[in-house]
Image 1 (cartoon, rainbow, N blue to C red):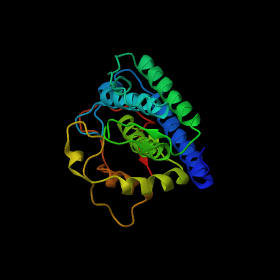
Image 2 (cartoon, rainbow, N blue to C red):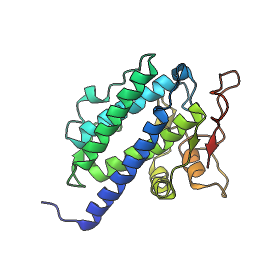
Image 3 (cartoon, rainbow, N blue to C red):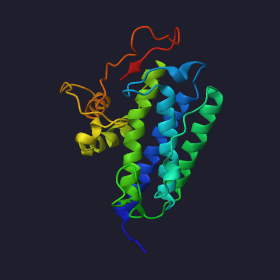
Image 4 (spheres, rainbow, N blue to C red):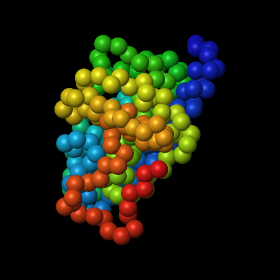
Length: 226
């Protein structure tokens, strides 16, 4: 039986923040409109359908890892959504609630989690795995918002937790691989805010805009990254 109150407190803190980041992303996905799935995203080579497929698979995979079955690759399989945005949003919402529930059920911050997308050679303690998921969805929440031309303003506590996690992500050659979630880090002004620093460290240009010629969502839906 484990007894480490500090690690238990960290587990509770990180899974609460991860749930917040995930639900922020659900609120964005719930605003999908017909035709949005073909929009380009800040993720090189991915349209919104590919990004949504990746995020849905990540929720399922991390939920499986928290339950002890992360080694089974079927849980991490990416299935691209169909053209029906309501169905795609519903599948995403269910996967999001599943990972939140799986993290909430963890009772040991040191429980080993297998994350084959990182490595099949080692496991990660649950508290660290949740940190991976948190930073992934802070950044991908921005990807969704910027793609859909919607506001994205994570609260300071969430950004404060995400910033050291972003610093800890190795800026290694695997960021150049096809399908890598993060690209090589970019320079950023020393006066940049926490979100912009997180984005730049993980290869996002904070001023990214969709290429000229892509349809706008119309008035009232403009980017507002703070």
